Length: 488
Ligand code: GBH
Image 1 (tube, rainbow, N blue to C red):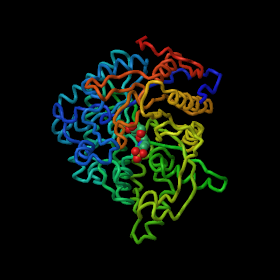
Image 2: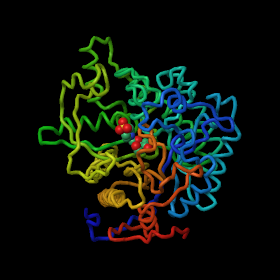
Image 3: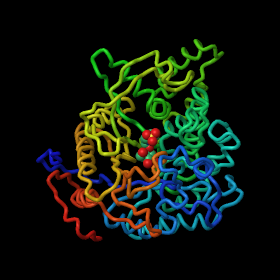
Image 4: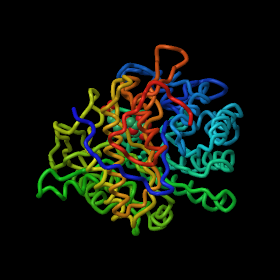
């Protein structure tokens, strides 16, 4: 394979920032230490490990709860501007509510943040990256509208505790993934599998919960703290596979990310028209008295619209798409997929690693970035995740190609006027990759799960990313010396 495909060296604009990301359940471990209580991922992986490819859990994960100093050392080795991590709700609020704050949990995040700030590494904090308190799930979780207030209480506690040091906040990571896979399928925790119903209950409650957290920050904290707050959406790119299929591809983009982006970032607010129309029509055909997609009231539309200072974007790959109204048999009725009525696929010739999770299609990233600019009046964007998975090994030239190709797309989008403020690689290190357990490796650093120290070793891609950050340029021909990693 030829990996060095370009000869030009391109520079990132002044002020452009680089980071890496992780998430609490995927790296922290210490699942029941120092007063932390059970979340839905603890609960599900303990109850039935079979949905996880290697039957693993996040009980120990990367042991970051104890190894955070090594984590910060790695951030310094890479020369990061910022680090994106998430806070575990049950670590700081074990009852789920704000009646009791767990000081040990608070101390952990304070230690981590202080260690980062000592070296000028800025924290970017996600409030919710899928690890809901199990107790709240037993009360319905994201299908219970009461969660809007529970989340507000949690957000207020976190803003109060860390608001003097954290200036970039993200309410949710990838609502589509946890609403759909968690409530509208049997795959991810809480595995509710109430298809075509519960994912839309989750969507609505979550969008209002996001808006409420935004308003709380905006009114109670921003005046003295002066930070910014946004949301991270997963958005892949859907491309028509022929001229006649542009409508299908457009609908696929609306069902994948428009469903969350439109209510927050569009001028009109509310769910995208096509999403509303299709789900209402399907619901009527199926004998439901009203749309399974719960409507927003005009007040709610106003309350949610405009509630983000930036668009957090998680992007991994692209798909070709066509319409197929009768995906009968393939998907349950009703379901989100059946409502969308689309078939998506990828081409065999797009590069893929030994693991089959992420295909290399950087042209789609550029198209996505341009579309976001066009639809939502050029919002500030932080790319909050982008990365490539393998089955391990330090010589990861395929991951290097992926990062270079996708960063090249970012540079193209910047040249065309997109307001992209930062780029976050997923991930700092290998971690518990949800349904794929530890079989799927996304790390710039490899983690050794056979030793209790969870030793972290830089991959070749870590050296390449470090050089990109150091020089603030993308040079396809740079060949790192991978013998020693240093702190510059
Ligand atoms: C993101 O999800 C997450 O934010 C992050 O936590 C995660 O580690 C990262 O990407 C890499 O996956 O049925 O096993 O094929 C991205 C969306 C949703 C992609 C679930 C994979 C199917 C898993 N992911 N999806 S599987």
